[in-house]
Image (cartoon, rainbow, N blue to C red):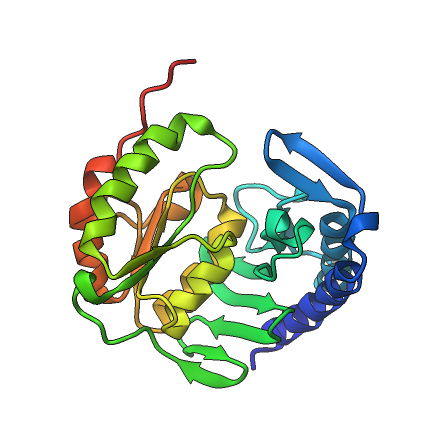
Length: 270
C-alpha cells in the first residue's frame, strides 16, 4: 500500500473509533442543525479533528478541505497536495442508528485524486485505491460488475434533503429511471454508494448537489475498478460541479441517455 494511503487508513480508523464508540450511546450526542435537515454532531467534529491531526502530523505542508471545518488556512489554487475529508458521511443515518455511514478520505495531487479510502465501521469494510494501481476491498482487488444493460442493473441514488428546489426534478428523474432499471436504492451515504459501485454491489449511481468530499474518494475507487464517472452531461468536471453519474462503462452510457435531459439546473422560485 502507498505510504500516504497507509497514513490515511490509520487516520480513518482513529476517526471511526470515535464514531463507533458514540454509536453505542447515540441519545447522549449533541446534534446541531446547520440548515433544515442538514445535521452535524459533535462526533463528526471530533472524528474530523482526529483524522486531520494524524495527517497534519505526517504531512505538515499539505492542505485540507473538510466537510465540517472547510478549507484549511493554507489552501489555495496551487497546492500540490490537498486532503479532501468527510469524517462521517451519512450523519442522518448515524443519529438514527441506521447502520449505513462511512469515513471518506482522498488525496488530491496537482488537481488529480491519487489516493482514496472509504471505511464503513459497522461492517469493517475498507475500500482503498491508488491511482494506476487498482481498487481494493479489505486487500482484495475489486472490479465493477460486467452488467451491460441498464434494465438488469441495480442503481443507487440520493434524494435532495437540503435544497428542496431540486425535489420536482428528482421526482421526474425517479420516474424516468425506475422503469428502466432493475431497482433504485437510496441508502443515504453517497461516498459509500460510490464504493459499492466500485465493488460491484451496485451497477450505477447518480445524484445532484453533492460536495467534493462526498465524491472524491468514491470516484477514484470506481475508475480504478474499471468504471466511469462523469456529470449528467458526461463531462469529467463533476468534483466541483456536484452532479454525478457513475457506473460500469455500458450502464454509464445508458444512464447518460436517460438523465442528460436533467443536466440543467431546475428553475428556482426563490
